Length: 233
Image (cartoon, rainbow, N blue to C red; front, side):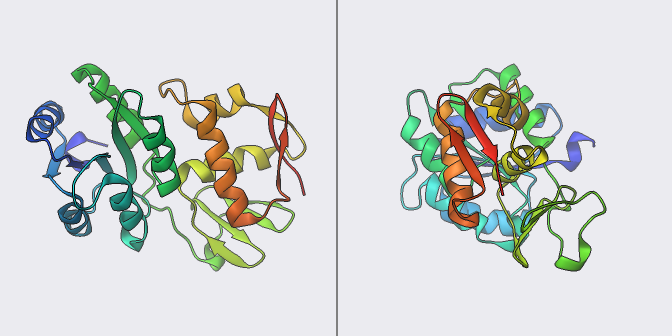
């Protein structure tokens, strides 16, 4: 897809950061929209429907975490890829961001070439056909126990109820359920779900597993201490 068809929303209360990011992304041909606060960002996102939102964590009024939660509650924006901008060492912000439904995070400061590479990788995750009804399950869907996983629609059905998961939660569940009983090591999970171009810690996996257990119950994903996780039913 041409860069000109990819819309990016940048949200940061520091004007110099907005100008730096905007300049480098527009130079690559992206359509860039900006906002200096979370409330305005939600309004712009509703109107523009970007493929990617780059969201600062620390903002007045409505911070990045609250903004992310609000964006994820809007049906038209559930497929947008959201990444946080975080300062080095803000581990608490990264965990809170994943809890709120973010797909990734970018650490500030960031060099232009690295920024473009990260944006390209993030946009490859965008799935414009992310939702599907019960009767629209694709032929590639897999069923394990009481859970049906539709990889094409990024949708799961649990005991007859459709559940839309954030992308990373979905990909983690799909990976574990692809081989029930197999223990996936943390390294395998990181490589398959987050990829080699994203640096995340072990706690990131734990957060996503906890969120899945909250939505599906404790019985499906088992912890194998010192190794990783497996799907069981």
